[in-house]
Image (cartoon, rainbow, N blue to C red; front, side):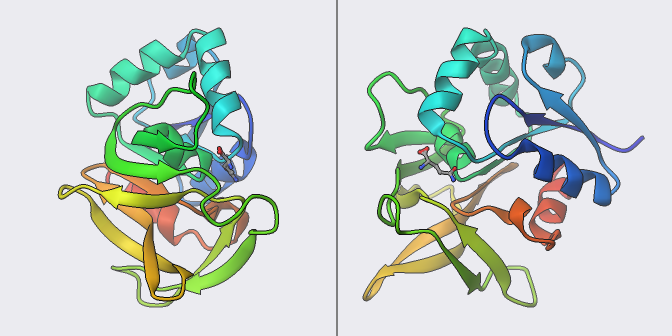
Length: 195
Ligand code: GLN
């Protein structure tokens, strides 16, 4: 049977992720409450506002059960705010915001600037033949990536300063940008290959 992939749907761009998964032959399950986690084989944490997502995960009592599944090795793909949620350390976060500590990166929120810094860029991705159209929206930036983290793509933040924007540690994939906002399915496919 095709894999069942949860898409966290508390806030943010969950529908586009579900569409991308279905186009690739996977099944998608929106996740809002703990019972939605029941038989998922993997999860996507979409973009949005990480402070709000963290708060809604707690108020819906979904944070702990999801954290447990992730700690047991549930494959995960985090995009933008989802990258922040999976990281080990959040810089410029709100003091009460939580993350799942599933990838050894320190992530600064809104690293590219607060409002103006939304942009699109063709980026080279390790393992993909042609550049990927990456859409950045008030995107987080990776300040430190630990030795276990594979950096699959970087972008120049300012002159001479390349920062990681696509990283993987085992079956956890994170992007600063929004692959679900393009018709390019290659990163969702890359994720499904790990599921
Ligand atoms: N700036 C948002 C945050 O902190 C992320 C933006 C996005 O997901 N597009 O959490």
